[in-house]
Image (tube, rainbow, N blue to C red; front, side):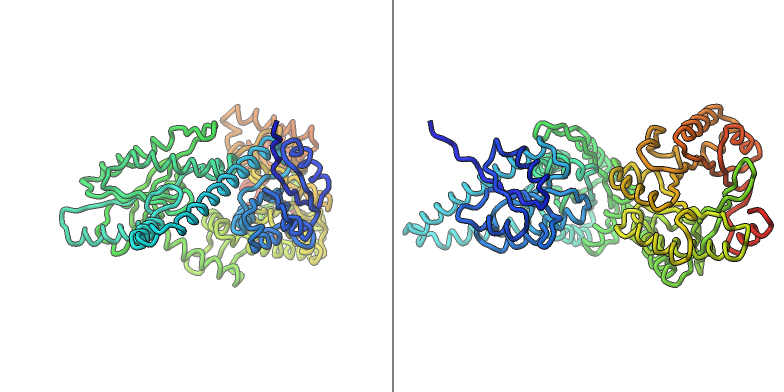
Length: 599
């Protein structure tokens, strides 16, 4: 019986435990070789019999996985070897960078046996297919070159190749539909035709697939490609032969609807596209669910270029996503005006951060039993030169979206620590005060966040116990493992960790056991309904009871009435803040509040 030669896999990892795990997983199926660093990996890959696939760790001392991949792609012998990065890194930018270096896939640590074997099998099958195809092509080329017929058909072959190149230049390689280049050409043709033909009208749709990325990440890029091909076919089934559908890249499509008779015709087509997109897809045996967010430019009279049309269709699509996705929105001039306002606001906010036009306000937090001042929550305000005092709900989302939240958050921490130090120096009764500082997801996930926080607190002569870090539960749910590790580090240094707006998002009382939380803040929505909703009283009672059993203190937010305070006191809530005690105040008013003996 003929023995089948096993395919060869090179495992590259500087951690023996990781090599042992992967080796045990693969040894029954493949011939395994091992490298514990980059140079060794390059040497093995360049051997007389190279590996069929490389499992490559990213984080290695000396030469990291990215550099190994880059050097492998420089050598003809090794550039065609498929590389799968095996890493715990989950940042989207890192994943994109790996693909630019030539990686074919990612496997997340800790590795799953079924996922690992499936992805390796898929990539090896693709490699075998490419190798066979390459061999066939090379054989065919050799046959053609050796044939006298090649000379007689040179011109015909040249024309055929030119046509193929033209198709490749104007069509998407995956789906076969027009690409952005051909779309822009047809958009500009439609604009010219509308300007010269009174009876001609057209509309433009821009479509983005909701939840495509999660499917692509979980099932793999090959499955994602199959899904895109299937989606394309379904969208085409909703269109007429005269219409144009183009893939702009990723999971984004554009559609030109020609000879439109009325608006209902356009919205009807958009509704059908949404309907077919929502119908489940079966991809590699899995049921995939997606939906479509669609932006529509209905009236195209005033447009001069295709770029302008796509810009406004994109704005409309963005509004569809803002409304919860899985819907369509028709562009209006107000959307463009809002977008320009946003650009202006971003520029002004950037200047405000640079010019220190931001200001911190402070809302007192009082202990319910003694009604003594325990500390303040720090709140950001923007002294806009044209609009006056701007509240956070107007600019914090923009800061999050643009990344300005990072320098803004650092400024808040520095300024808050300076103010607390000033109060402790100026007022004897302020020695025990603490300051609660809200921290955004993006700032919390910065690698240097803990170091920055420690150095800022230390430079002001404060202790970590003077500072309370307020985090939202959405941060914890979205980044569970990494969040827990960083929270544990902060807690070891002595910072108090506060879970803000408890009960408004994903929270469950059971989550309190998963995270090293010292304090929770009951959201104002529960506090405001304590007087007229028995359910709210029971919810707050349950939260306080469980928190006490876990040695977690409780602060009630938004306390505005004496009746609410009495109920909270009866339920043994520890602390409270709200308009009943004081509105947020600037640092001067905070000083007077402390001086009046309310600390």
